Image 1 (cartoon, helix red, strand yellow):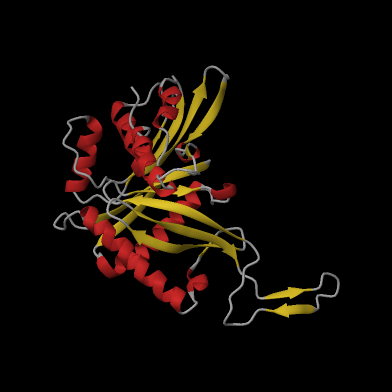
Image 2: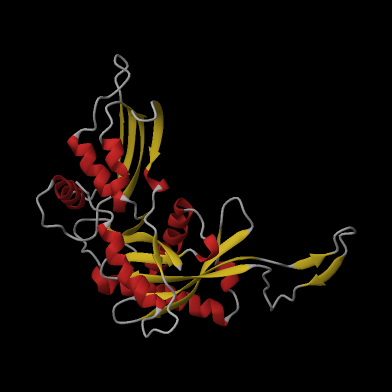
Length: 300
């Protein structure tokens, strides 16, 4: 079984005079990245293109990119760099890696699939070796931003892990809150619905608002808020795909104050690797994206 995480990758116009790039634009982004990766591999420099993962000696890099009719797929590699091998007690150098043959002592390849229609990337958590979601947001942003500078320099890149909307249900029903910290950006598809989420999203887009940051806290007199206002609830629903939130609330069941961090609840879906099937793992990963999107929706 492959456990997948999902990320909403967007290229948003800086000015409302510019257009959304659409599926064809996302394909161009990955074509740009593919060209870069191919050249680096040809020159045996791809290992130097890796993103240095924080608090470790490991790196993360796109290894392959293939573009099909409905989706884009390939692999990322997580790895370390080895330059020499020393004897344990004396520190004597036993082996030095030739400069023209980059070496690694440990590495893992992770399958990914990108849906250009919904701009969602699904990535396999091979042997539980994926970086944590917040780090992976930075990693994916880094590589897509690099690609965008060539084809869409007037667009801003955002990357957010998809989160389980139903994890908010218990929080929304609480009766005491200390604070709510919330960050959202607008979405790529133009939503024609008339609900509050769509109104906020549409007005942010039309006004060229890059990021909305909200800090709501209780008054010094009462010390607590009694509920989450409806407009904040709408923003929390948007944050399931386009942002993040931290909420300090009182859990009536456990009778204590708790901190809800939205990013701690990424959507995870298990997909079987095919054994005797004509359906590839990539196709199964692509099909699972629809289920992931459903789980970001308001359950109420």
